[in-house]
Figure: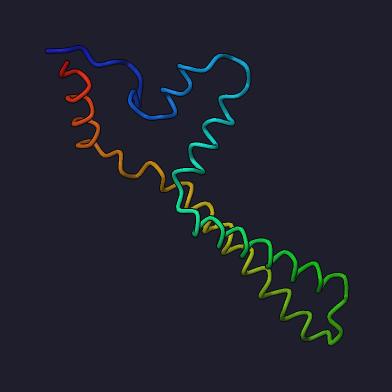
Length: 116
């Protein structure tokens, strides 16, 4: 048979990009850019807009630019919930990138790689 490498994820794009890059500090940027490119851009834009608008509503309420106190309170609560949901949505987008690297997919990639 063949000997498996001792790395945990030998065929992921992150480990390959880490091997190919030098120690210039550009590794983190390339990993971040590769993750951004693999995300559905519509989901990313909507999560960013939701987070930004929620923070803006909270800032307006705290700056007392919304005059009825009860309305400012309601807007602060809704803006805070919107911001938290936007953060969770962004976390969900970036954490689900590597979910298709199941054991079967890794085995298929390993067979294709070592076929030649």
